[in-house]
Image (cartoon, rainbow, N blue to C red):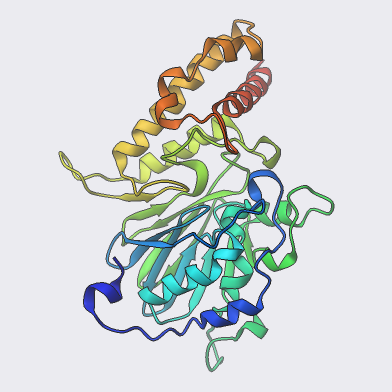
Length: 340
């Protein structure tokens, strides 16, 4: 339930959702999973879950959206698909009547960056010095932050993941981490090299004790290894280890650091540990099979994921169990060759 519904106070919507109607809803998307693929979004509803006092999780179609609010404005992580921007903006307006200042993209896939242009347009850039106030969209809109590998993927001429420049990040970094102080808390944007992609970041809201992790962790499916996008099995393990290291649980009970996954339910330490255990067990099985000389078809026939399939497996859709095994086999084969 959102804040307005809990308190009964009306909220003034300064996000001006109506202006989104004039923007192109079906903005160009990358290929494969990255596309909306003619999906009908008319029936999709955006659900709002309050995570902490000033952090919310929005669930619709595509990646989960994390929203942090406060006196400085609105900070969001990921933007789902472009056709959902009106609904996402309306959901944010029910939480805060201040403009969007920052958008962080956890990676370059279309179900996480599709609404960049639309939601950026209803925001405004944070200014300082002798500037009298926020810069309107004509001068910038909200800042879109991502690792530099994201813009390299999205802007590559002729690349199968290239998109319109309206979806590109406006502020990139190439170090291991970018830090911001916004809405009275420190925010760490931490790069996870060669994980789900080569541009993954996790976003740690230190005071709120919430981590938005993008697609390096999901409660609904096996890890999506975008090998063409620089992803790797080893990198996913490293990213999960980073998340576990950041989490501090409440001893002997539920609670502590909360995790917003790329897809699926709000999670805690136990959920991430269960997922990491699954990833490690399958890793060890596949590595043993590969080092024993088994072909991909033989590995598939052996069913290395069988005991986890009821929870994470799929026989249809974009990321089937078969596709996961194929990608994992390719990634680990490359890793093993590199070690020899």
